[in-house]
Length: 354
Image (tube, rainbow, N blue to C red; front, side, top):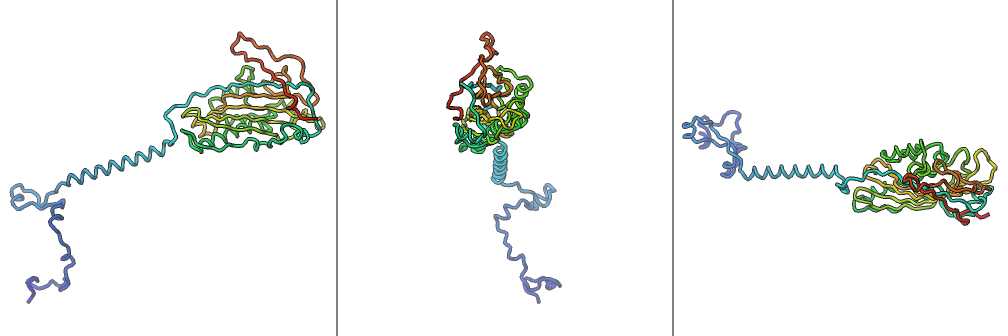
């Protein structure tokens, strides 16, 4: 006979036999049953309404509320991540100022006598104030880049390196110096200043806005050539935050060139000195494109003749030459577009010693 728990016909063939049923260890307590989403209707409910055997139980309101809060938190976190990824932490809502035209002043410095010369550039450099100047781009060192209130360290460094790049291209590139090319410097000019840049070279004018020599150091290739391409340079760069949307870089450098007349290889060498004080502005777009807004250019150059036009080219007085008598072009005080005619005297100590 079978046991009290066995069916009358005995254990079915193929069944677990005396083995313990694998589901006997599963215990469904009262809380589990009540939490089930499906609940069986009572017999009376099924007979009364012809309802299905089970009904769906609604989720607990607390669980629904928690789920909604979780979804909301995820959405807020995702939106914040996207916002911070798109917007730079140093960005400001203030719009940058419109690009201003470059204002330039070029002052020729006339020598007090004949320009001294020598047989080679090294000797002249050694006997001049440029003896301890660096050579080429090494004379344009970068200061330590520290972030400002609204610009990061890397943005300040980008402004400084871009300003240095423009200085090197506009005053040290031989093809620019000899008046044959403008593209190296032009490539770094903000697009909103390109019209002024191009007009300066296409239609030069002594109006304080359109002199090529305000943009670059430019010699007349028909008259002058470099006797030594190791140009001596000394100066510094400084930076400041002009406003929350603009960085400003100030540059003040002195360049000394060894020159000979074009077409001669044995003529004496003389030195030509150019001091340039430039002011650059950088918006965040300029930093992204690595371009400059050149806002002011103050240039002193000599030895030059005050009677010589320095608008298109700088035409230095070479070894043995003296300034021509005469005065610079007159200034009309009744015309606001007529710039003041300026001329200085080159100090004797600025020339190499014989």
